[in-house]
Image 1 (spheres, rainbow, N blue to C red):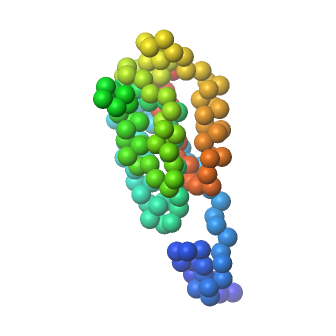
Image 2: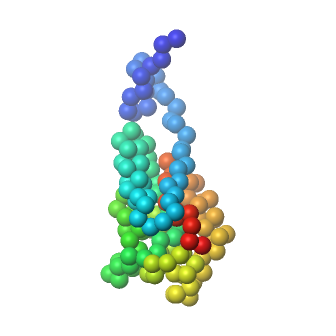
Image 3: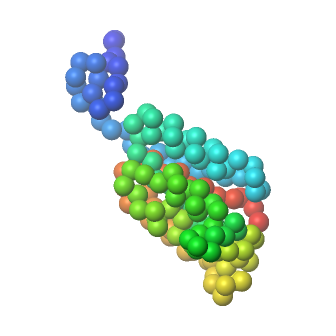
Length: 143
């Protein structure tokens, strides 16, 4: 059985409409700072967009590399620079703290808390915002 070639615009070589692929949920996870999470996230984002996929990014908490002028953490700025496909910049990394420390310690330095239930709720809400590939960026240790 011959199959049609899928082309940009959602039609095969015969012009028949193709169903949009379901949203992907990807997680980029590393065990330390500087292991390449931001580079992998950027490559995935650019590659998926080159193939016609809408991509939304999400990192629940970013700490360190603080910029007083923008009141943002380095990781938050990195992800916001990749923002597109209709995603509001403020939804990329909703909680950012100045200290280069584990999220619970960085939050405590400014009198805040980062609760596991808040992080789970943030992740659960993110994919519902659009029918796009969702890439979540996280660090797997340090808590």
